[in-house]
Image (tube, rainbow, N blue to C red; front, side):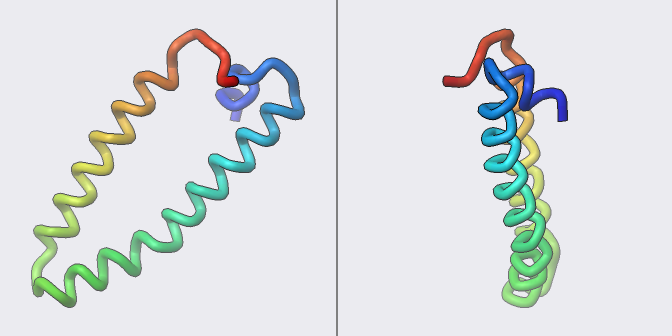
Length: 74
């Protein structure tokens, strides 16, 4: 939770960033299991779902690396 406040100059901007990020996170958490189940039903195996999961983890790791830089978000 501290990450959002470290990336903005004041508490109001930090709250706005936190709300946006959490909204996207909850949306992905709601869609993810349904998407994985749908992909399993279509392909009758978990390979496609696991590939999507691996690619997503790599992308999030890359975004997290750049988000950790010592600067503010405008």
